[in-house]
Length: 633
Image (tube, rainbow, N blue to C red; front, side, top):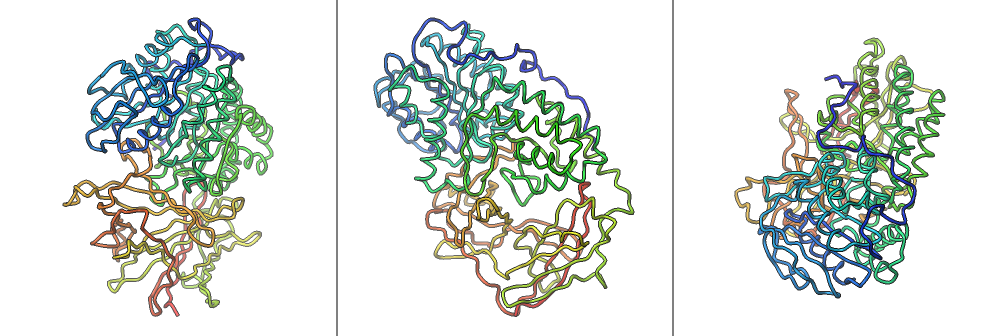
């Protein structure tokens, strides 16, 4: 597949046609006369995140409205995900619009029944009606659901799993503001995963002064809506104070909930996005013009840059990387594009007003971008994202450069007899491979995998982690400590596959574990859900969060499992004929009572025959692997 260098403009997506945002965030031009704030909260809760969203709205209700603070809610609920009560509205099925009055009380505006909250017209009407009913000096819109960055937000499960994609988000907001006679929002928030991306921020920039969103997956508790108390206390609160309160409240709630190790949240000054757009265009252009010479540097940097929603299964990886870190690192190593890189980094720094990160996301700059390492991993829909046009042009040049690597320069291990060097030191085995030095400059990464050899000759892989390229030598090395992650529910145990990344800045290891979840009602296991378990290891497991993946959209959200449901770890198995499949490590499964699940790295049994693989990969996604088999002492 070859990426096209031009993008198709999306119908209704007017982000590229709006006038540049103004610099004054103190008021919304064209707004009806009013004081204080109107906050519009749009809960696409017809999904498995409904219980978390109910908690959020109850937090919002604890703040309550005042003469100068108006709180309007649209919540779309499902019959599938519980009957938790929302303030004094109780429980219901379908969508309701209501105003929050005094703390804990509401006034029903409209019972919409079955409605598609992923329809931009639904969003537009909610915005227009909310502003018309509550004219104010300042307006905020917050949208909650699963998030996937540029693919959008959703799904609405009751409307055939429809998704509010990025073009529809901008259309819904633009139409709603136009109907209300308001130029832009003061604050736009996405209480959802992965939405603090360049593609999203650039697209919504014409419609809001500030954007609050997360680069990484968000824990289910999401934001702490009691942070909006600042608006009740002082109706003259400016947008930056509100945004900072949201970021601080989110961080404090994550700390209290034990999820702070993996969080990100940033507030972006969207009036600075035209400068980011210009800088990214120049940076992308410079990279494209010099693709043949800078691609090796770009490949190495991409492999090492902080990424978000990482998965051992590359088809389920978000492929979102931190843009600030990416540009800065490329600028350091590729001097011929350093000026453009520095300009982009400065523009990002100017745009990010405030942000928070965790030990596993330390150094996140507040803005991500889509960067699949290989061309066959690019989703074709990305070419339809208007705000991604210049970056997509660079990606095309980068992949073309990878395709042009001469065959003689492809990576190739040269170990005698094709066997890796294995050495035991009492704690584990080191693995060493020597490769043809002609490929050195093109290499981007080294990876180590370890597997258990079956009686039939199959290999069941139980983990992967980074290897190391030795400086000034054509040598790659790795070390395996002969342990396996075992998950237990107290009755049964099952080994799991682990993808391990080490955060040098945070000093912790970040582990991703692929799982399958079956709801308790799914007794025949016909409706599996792909789940990613995120663990943080600091000598011991210090946090764990289960995220469920929507395979249609790539959107993630925290899993709300039924304790009587089942969790099944998945591992890849390589058959003797070379066929690779992912499958369960247990036929029984583990009860999904996640509060009681334990995680332990246990030593492999002595006598177990294992294979350790060491790979080197170049920026064209060409790789070579050397392996060795050994018996566990």
